[in-house]
Amino acid sequence: MAGHSKWANIKHRKGAQDKKRAKIFTRLIKEISVAVKEGGPDLESNPRLRLAVQNAKGENMPKDTIERAIKKASGSDGDNYSEVTFEGYLPHGIAAFVEATTDNNNRTVSNVRSIFNKYGGSLGTNGSLEFIFDKKGVFVIEKEQLAGLDLEELEMELIDGGLEEMDKTDEEVITLYTSFDDFGNMNATLENSNITVKSADVQRIPNNTETPDVEKAKQILNVIEKFEDDDDVNRVFHNLELTDEIVEALEND
Image 1 (cartoon, rainbow, N blue to C red):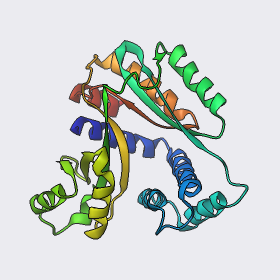
Image 2 (image 1 turned 45 degrees about the vertical axis):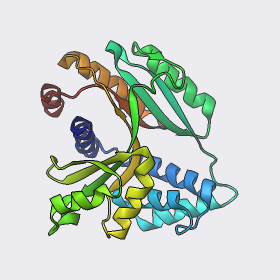
Image 3 (image 1 turned 30 degrees about the horizontal axis):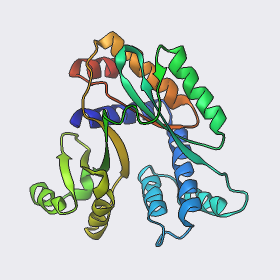
């Protein structure tokens, strides 16, 4: 799964360069809104909201922005969002799973279908790609948070929390992977250990990948960016294998 986190890190760097922080904040505010509507505005009794706020802080969202989002979602004039997913194939046979949060389902369905069709992809039915993606808990921790700790010992301790893999290859962060069922267990384990995560969420990790050449990969990633540019789309998961050659080409663009 290291290749998956590698792409996430590339996107993080490119995102900073492309000034996409506003899009990140919008996604996080939507998550806060959905969490409040689902379980109320109290952080202590609403674990989903607690996690949403934690992720917002990890992206350096100002405290007053977080508080305003919670207050607005608690009121009668708060936006009513629904979460929707789409499954299909991008050009060159790459599978894609699109997650969106929307206040207008017809608009979102139309936009997502249009991108699939316009760029040589095909929108499938829900459940058609379940065999390609596994839902995993993914926790990103800045290495400075773990300064002074023995990472080997920590890894052994976190196994009790459901740890399946610890990726230590990045210079700045460590990424932990758990099964979907152990997501809450790991989150509680990290909280009890006073370890603050930069982000914690459930992601769809491909269990098999495809390796097109660099030019085809660029075409595929261009379509993924079209999805991500849509205001309703939160994330796009795919099974493109990011080889070192592709990564180098992306970083040099």
